[in-house]
Image (tube, rainbow, N blue to C red; front, side, top):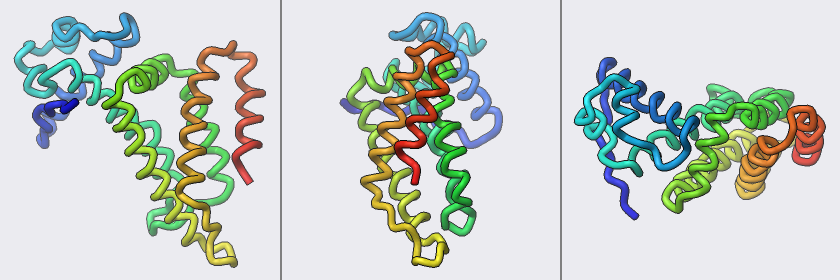
Length: 195
């Protein structure tokens, strides 16, 4: 399935309008699930429906926009924290903190709803898979250049990809558990995947 992309603004006003539409779509998704009513999104964002279609020409394009923002803000920010500005690995204790931060997404109903929407669509799963591979490669490169006295930890990208995938599935599992049970499960997962 080919998803036609809409306009990608570069000026502040256009970026704000696009973000306003995504915010409204996120609220709509959280309250009503899929499919998202585009007219309701336009009303909620206080933009004409024609403007919405300029940025998101279809329902699928809007969902892709939400997924891309989710992947960038959730996974991308965590990877940024783990990779120092010179391209090497950050502090070793940052790995556990970052993993716990990622697993805490289970407490964010909106992010969980977006993750479930991604899992429900082939094109979005492909986007997620591509993002996971890119993040795993970036982390593997950073860890392989880490100055730990042994020439780096040389963690294969495939192992990191598996950890990222397992963490994503664990988030969905945690979201379905009682909050009181989550902490112990997070501790177990972190112990399982960290050195």
